[in-house]
Image (cartoon, rainbow, N blue to C red; front, side, top):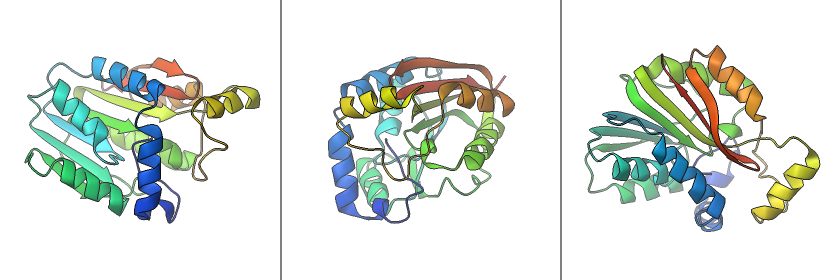
Length: 213
């Protein structure tokens, strides 16, 4: 989970952020999902938006894979995460790291060729998830791509328990508000996105992708 949350205080504390990054940064399924996300990036994106950028992990992957990117706007609400992202991109003038809360409407930026999110949107209430997807669709250039690497609900409690065991967790994070894949794909279509699909899944991790047009 690359991102900030609806949890009031935890993500404001460096110790919480350090524990999280140390816990998830080397998970093999996460790395596999990121590899698929890189594979579905547009061939020549110029402007990129990273929603819930955390320490800048996904933005860095996009820049490495598509070095012709002109500008990245990376948004997060966690001060420690923002500090890490700003340090990561201190020497890259293409990257604008901004404080921003996904619980609030996105600002009226120019449109983007690519919008990514890594393990962030599941922290939002369902009504806000749906509103955010509409904002994403509105801010994509024609043929722009939205790629959301996300934590999703399992089909049964038993399967979810197995997922948590596999990622070394005793329980969900308190801010998690998980939704099944099919519901989220429906929300993406309702928001106006096309070519919507789940292009990769491992237990409770999934890559949900859609396009504008």
